[in-house]
Length: 206
Image (cartoon, rainbow, N blue to C red; front, side):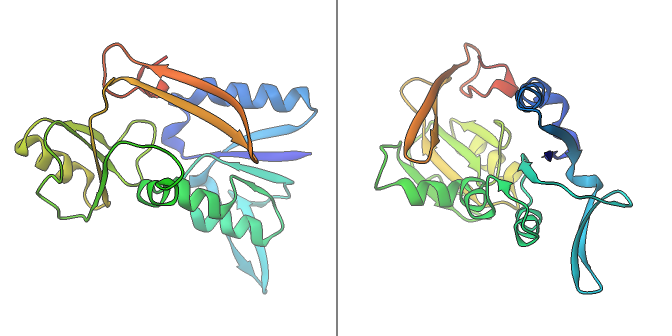
């Protein structure tokens, strides 16, 4: 069995530890997992038939693990009968913080959260607030604003993406990530940073 582990090229170095774990786990199951950048993939239709290439070579793969935000590529893989993890619908929701918070607002407790459009300039909550890009990941596009000036600076850095604003939690630098398979909780991980209000591993959190 052969699969692709798809990343954006500029994200591979910062995720190398995670990539190595993926490849090691696949090898233990006699699965060939190949790291492929989204930037070397082309896909579309030739003579009415869907194709996917790495460079100039058409590839035959059994599955793909999508670690980048390319919903059309995920949809294309699925249309070709190639399972994509996460699937395109799940990725569309989970890669958009506004959609994610909206979907789970009635099911899970969360800090007060507001959605703003691209050109917003007034904070919906008293400072300090956390300002996030709707499509940011790995702690990027996430800013702490303690006043109007910092709030507007954050908005300008996030533009042209949509915006999520949240009240700063009681314990900055900590979050609990829970892994769920189907309806079962598989594991939980408390992430912590002693130096940053963000706890992402890619930013030095542990």
